[in-house]
Picture 1 (cartoon, rainbow, N blue to C red):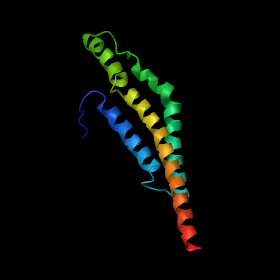
Picture 2: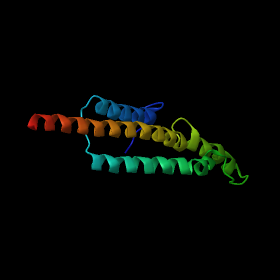
Picture 3: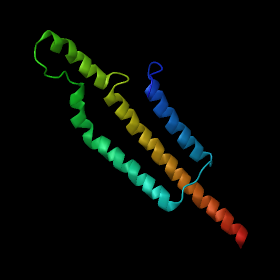
Picture 4: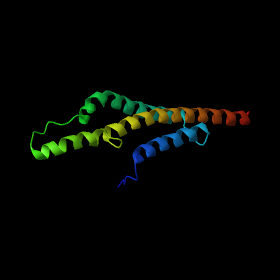
Length: 127
């Protein structure tokens, strides 16, 4: 179960994880072969495309829903829109997730380059 640990905690976790991932790849801490990297890039790009395609459809969540005019409905309307679009809301986090996919793609590309460099270095010692 996730427990929110303060303002922007989910954003911080998403951003930090992808920064760490890309940084590890840039530092050469791991490598990915061409086939594995291609599969990961396909998954990342498919998810990014889904977010891009659904962005306008999902934006309706930030609007006040038509729940009627009862007291309960009037209380719930702003709350429901807030849950979708405040700093920790679904739409906000979805956009941060989309940004993290860019970092993930960069990390995978670097890891693939790391694999090629390592492969060439090892091949050079075998000659």
